Amino acid sequence: MATRTSRLHSAPAWLLALLVLAAPWRAVWGQQAADIESILDGLRDLPFHEFVDASYEQVLRRSPQLVTSLGRSHELGMRNDHLDNMCYAFVDDTYRLKEGIRDILGTYDRSALDYEQQISFDSYSRVLADWAAEHEFMYHFYPVTHGLSAQNELMRFLEDDHPLATVDNAEDYVSRLQEVDDHLGCLIHNLGESEARGIIAPAQMLQQAASQLRGIVPGSARYLTFYTTLADKTRSIPGLGEAARLDLLTRAESAINTSVIPAYQALVARLEEQIPHAPPMNGLWQLRDLMDRFAGGPAAVRARLEGAMAKRRLRGWNPPLENINALVAS
Image (cartoon, rainbow, N blue to C red):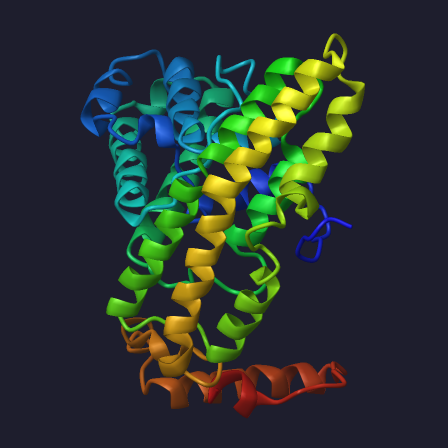
């Protein structure tokens, strides 16, 4: 049986698109060296409807995995052969791109637009404003947890979202396996950057995340979902002979042994380094600049939550489990 983390319930495609584009760990390897200013220059002075489409496309292109998940690679003239770049430096560039797009949007005269364009203007303004507001807090999350985290999402993505209907799809799959070391290398680097800012996931989360990955070891390649997914789905690819299929599997196994397994082992090692000095419990208290925004700090947050839940109880809301101290003090 293939080794893999627990599956997550599926969500509507439009919701996934918004969540993923907002998530700070989305970007694209192929555009890492791209000059943000040159991209923005190409968006200036376009007719409004062209600007909206072209600028959103530029943001979308920075997440090749999302492009694949949305089934838009052919439309955008892209292959499904790259993984997302999660490095914070590139994430910061992505936010700069979004902020530049917002500035360009502000140059259009809303009153000169027709009714439908005004709706687009208002909606896009809200989305871009939200992206601008979240830039300040791009480090305020745990790079690795035991749940919806990049190292687990990668397994789900390759098994569920990467298409394997053609020979090109299969070749792209192998190309993505070859990028796993760089993909997770950014995740490991992000762990260090977050730690330097005083943000470390609770020890129990890191322990569970590491435990989930301990089966990814040398000699396990053919038992991992990275291999079994390709082996199973390539059996029905039209025009793919058995010799060519076996060659694909050989190259996939090589990529797993040289890229995937070392990357996951390096991640486990990094998590084990953090566990001894990770906080023992969950909580917002690590995010001091965020907590300082609340007058009175954590005590004020607790008071507000207690007041809100008291009002809900008066309206008949009575959950079976309720522990404000565990929610806030931890």
